[in-house]
Amino acid sequence: MTLAFRTHGEGRPLVALPWFGLDGAALAAALEPAVSGHDGWRRVYVDLPGTGGSPGGVPTSDAVVDEVLAFVDDELAGEPFALAGCSYGGYVATAMARRAPERVRGLLLVCSGEKIIAAERELPPPDLGDAGGDGGSATSGGWLAGVPGPLADHLATALGRRTAAVAERVAAVIAAAPPSDEEYLERLRSTGYRLSDEGEPFRYPGPTAVLTGRQDRVAGYADQFRALSNYPDAGFAVVPDAGHYLPFEQPAVFRDLVGHWLARLA
View 1 (cartoon, rainbow, N blue to C red):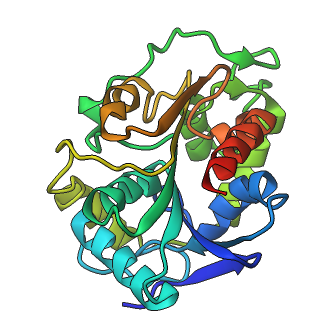
View 2 (view 1 turned 45 degrees about the vertical axis):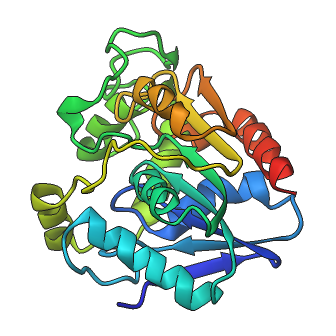
């Protein structure tokens, strides 16, 4: 399989893996404002199988990890790389660091999945305070009034910073993503979502940053905190007033945290 990708900048490679069902351009919209001011990095934004320009493949997360590892072998010719992942992309990135730690020079996990089965995750309670809110109900004259219905339902759960500006920004990024191979993604979710080595203890020694949102009701933050023993050189942040789209909800905080991680890789 040939995975589609796009690059920004020149220098050492930083491979970036996006949210489930979104293409690499969605992650570029989130990450570029935080990394573009740091010289010396070639950012490689990958379309995971079944998204963007990449075809679907074997519908298992193990196969997704294998495809991305094969991609970096071909594209980077064995050069070590920094690795970033958001949500499902972070779940894949974790597996790559677990299986090939010598290849990964640094790891950035943003709103990353630790447990892929939703019912097994520890999530913040639904009544945990959220920032913002423009009055009215969320979808009727409120902060989600400008977002289409099915996506509004998702953002009502996923966002912690509940303002019209944040909701419309995230909605625009999602809407800009090209159509995915929904049949492949549904088979992946249904039959092969969990990695065969999910939850197994390991040791990844490289500089690591684990960034989570306090109001992330999709991936949470508690499971990620419990996994820190796998990363002896990790920093952990749980950002208030942020949910599953932390880079768009708290961009200034995100930029500072990513900058600190990049400085550790210098």
